[in-house]
Image (cartoon, rainbow, N blue to C red; front, top):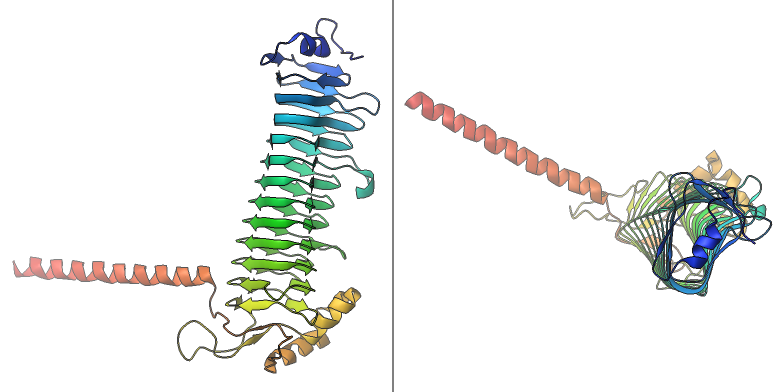
Length: 410
């Protein structure tokens, strides 16, 4: 039975008497109870409205209905803030969720939009926390513009068809976003910082990872992105910096890594049993200790910029005249024995890597870029702008000189 701290307003009673399509306005106040919605209505709070779950039940349950909106409410409680089951058409917006084990739990639902919510988990180890937003066995989901921290997984997705995760920020958690057994997924314009791993993608097909910032994942078992048993992934226009490993691929196929910036990672790209059609092209590699490493299967490197490339361009076409050898002997050892990473910046390892690159190894199982770029794309664009500015300045100077001479003759 629902209870409130205000005798003159009963939240559950207001829900029960509301007609389908109506808006239930909840005044400011702290309302304790386990509230249930099973009809198409809108719950709308105001500044200071808080629903507090009691015992181990969710603060708010939404089930077996359609077209429900919940907005402008703070939720807290011991277990879950919101649980939605079998809902077609659900919008959660402008919610504050705090001091809960799990923020939002969605299952067997479709046409769901979760946006502009803040989730702050509890203190303690990741294993004792729940997820910020979790979606199971659902379809047509949008998770957008949310801020999530101190949880197990910021956004957990399992057996979902068509989901867009965009413009979210996840920090200080285990995984920023975790995809499992999912298809037709997109992760766009998200920021993942100081988690164990930014993006964990497992047994997933057809996924686009674009325009994300993934930084500062430096734990021993941490990655910027980890793809395990993934097919058909596009990874484009991401900034991947200061991670132990930028992108790791394991048992994955048809992975396209294109036009990303890899900055200051211990290892930029790592592949284990990656398919031959996996390709890293037109990326910028700057400040990384190791550019790439793999097992004997390897993957393709094409038209990338490497700041440690020592070749020259006699043809003047912007492409190095000798191949770039990315694989190092030490990198191979690190794949077999990850504990070796602790020696990655030692003088002996740096010398070994330099010697590997000076020897033009082009065996089939090596990571070799036969067309390395000598300038990053943004540097090339800046140079073009400089040339245009110089030509414009020259034109103005000549025009001024012509006008001055004309004035003198007159």
